[in-house]
Amino acid sequence: MAHDTDRPDDSNRPRHANSVAEETSASGQRVKGAIKEEVGDMLDDESMENKGARENAAGKDRQKKNDAV
Image (cartoon, rainbow, N blue to C red):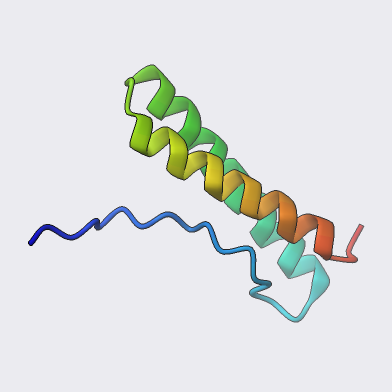
């Protein structure tokens, strides 16, 4: 049985109590997702593209919930 070792980080749950740390982490999640999405598009890898889109969306959602900015 094959395991998907490239698990997307698509959880939108907060990870930090400090709002600045949470904002930084969510921004990183968005950037990572956007890069995966673009690379997946360039490689015609729909799975990678979808994972990136989910990560990017989760990061955006975390930023909306955060009160740092």
